[in-house]
Amino acid sequence: MTKIAIVTGSIRPGRQSLNVATWVKSIADRRTDAVFEIVDIADHPLPLWQDEIPPAAAPGGTTSESKAWSARMAEFDGYIFVVSEYNHSITGALKNALDYLKPELKDKAAGFVSYGAAGGARAVEHLRGILSELGVAHVRNTVLLSLFHDFESFSVFAPTEPAAASVAPMLDQLVLWTKAMEAVRAGEFSADEAAAA
Image (cartoon, rainbow, N blue to C red; front, side, top):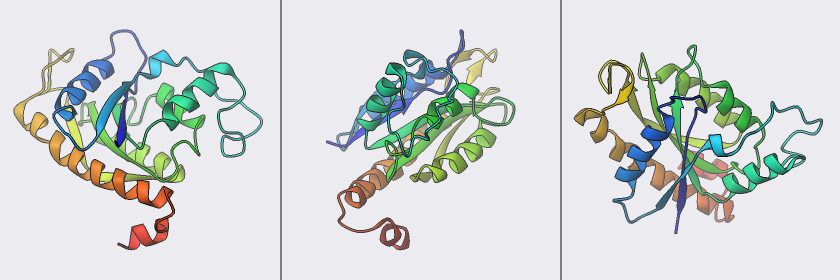
């Protein structure tokens, strides 16, 4: 069965990332075409990446923490990144966690659920560039949660009906692309052929 991780993007106390991830999972679990698991980056404390050898040449890194993180992310066929916007971009914690990875994500697919003053859209745009470099196919449909409408008093997650309705279209695209990338990884056709399809 296709496995998709819902990856939190923040580790700070009082974060909303895990609440949003849990909400996404409650919707995703209604599907029968994939299984979904939350991967909380707070469970994988990683020092600032500074290995001499890049992840592409040394998958898993050199520490027990990095090896555990690598193995966990390698388990999945696709990913949903829960993206909180910090200073018009993703959090330092998420960027650092991604810097440890490359082969674990290559030729897989990703979708996004973001939140912030502008729905987290600017952070998602930055994350798209990072994931492209890592060889990840990312889907167009994105769930954008507004701090003004989907959070009471900017602090209590209370998604609106339009926000909830935007999850299924993102999941539809993500599951489709995740399965397509499984075929790429199996060698059924090349990534170039997939892009041209």
